[in-house]
Length: 184
Image (cartoon, rainbow, N blue to C red; front, side, top):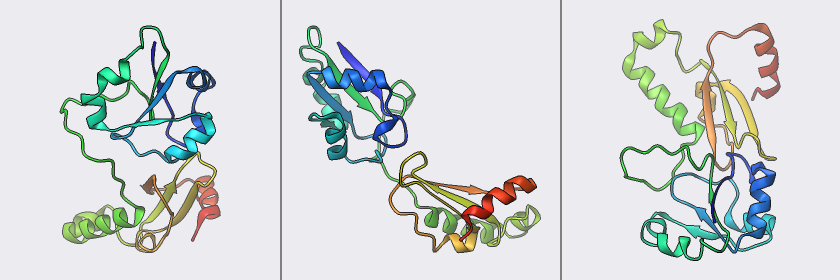
């Protein structure tokens, strides 16, 4: 039986109990490694699952599909996917290597866009002094959250991926109070 198992978006412990149990009993375990960025490295997964995990890049999946499916009629095989294994709805079958953008680069691009758009952004109250919230590795043990201006965000170091940048609009007083915990 071939099992498609979603790993969630955070760290190695985000897998379901059922998915974890299936991995433990499978003859082979493959890790899809070309459409998403995994927070943990393969070695950490192998230590957590207590078994070898075989990396499956795009070429391996497309050309070596027979190898992945070999003996699946009488052996259990796991195919691990970051996020939802059935959630990929690519109409265009073209994949780029997984990449990520730091909040610093996102902030820089926004500032450049504001300058190019001029008054349109000022009328919307979007400037270098606009408040932002940066998130990194949400749900993981080493998650980070930071609140500062867009200009200050250029210098924030959140470490490795995955990062998200939120441009904050008008805040409720309770939201303002909560965000004070994460000021730079």
